Length: 370
Image (cartoon, rainbow, N blue to C red):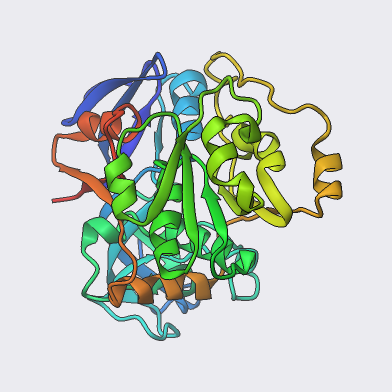
């Protein structure tokens, strides 16, 4: 079977497909590695609820960068690490206890958290190695997708959809609310923006540039605020002060990177507003000896949250029902999923470069096995 892998510095380059890409000034070599298929005996009791699948396509997320850099910078001298966060696969075979899945079905990962829904089965992402072409999963870690969902969308779907639908559910939005989505061009934020079209709310985004302004406005964004790094408090941003603060501020904030935005947005939030975050930006800077983020915090964040009765929420992925709702919305035409590009064959360095380096990327980048 094939694997999309990151090679250590001294791994022999005797691979039919390989390439090197500069990521944040670090040379990263990737390759398609061939390894044996896993063994699957359906009569083995340990495989009663297991499903054998063949991955058709996969994508990388921001979370993969830490693993990529760990292998490139600190990995064993001649090793490799198989990466990937999201996938779409075809079912090859199932254990005798599996229900609801059969050979030929297409599936994606079910990242249900904080419970997998199955006693003794760990919650969360099914695999950190989504590019392994043939894999074995417990049935609770998979969910069937409809024929209306193309492979390139399915390979981009599960984490972003399950996470954003969880955050929106937990915020309990009301009609006419001002909703801020930070880092508006990140993959998580794009999912949130598209999902929010199903709610009667005013959607605002922050970004570092006006690139893709028209595309975001077409998806229901009322206004984009370009916020430079030196702006330490969103309430001091002239457009936010003029357009949002007269109506009380932001009632809800969806933020994929709390270390970039939390302390800066609090003063721009309305009394009793809710903030929710699903991640942090600084996951690898120290590892690759890059400059740390600016220190936006002032030490008064909890005081502000207390005085304004703010609700500060953390969110890790979501429930199975969140993913089911997202799939249902997509099937009904109520959720748009943005795929930037699809690569295959020998285009592995192009795939890695487009995923992390291209400033004109808009949406997910997918690699398809052919």
